Image (cartoon, rainbow, N blue to C red; front, side):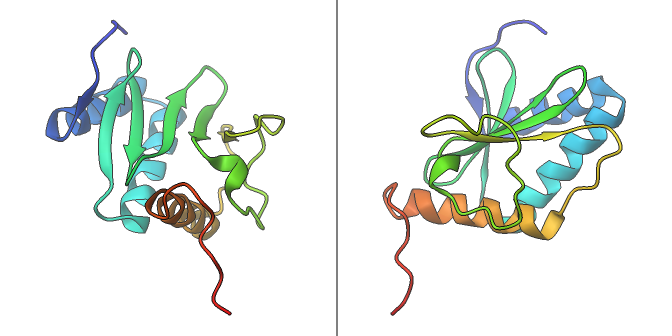
Length: 137
């Protein structure tokens, strides 16, 4: 895929749809499913197209990217290290100080409910100014 400038809004959504169709295999299906879950979790999420063709979902700041590789679809959360992950969805980039990722492989089960909770937590973290939201007393 050719290098493309940052794009957001309607044109980014079209580019993401085109990318999903272009994949045409389990990776496209996985990326489409994840995209739908993100939109369910945060209905006013912003779709962007950055860094030579990377889908990015934002809400008050970046939530995650969605990249398709030969053997995995990688969802990298910008502030993943600051998020609680009781369902242990994060399975990649665990050594980093800031980011965490979820690698989805062909045929793997995916916990949609836990993923949507993680997306909502990432959005809440962004709207809290990058600080973990305080739990009510």
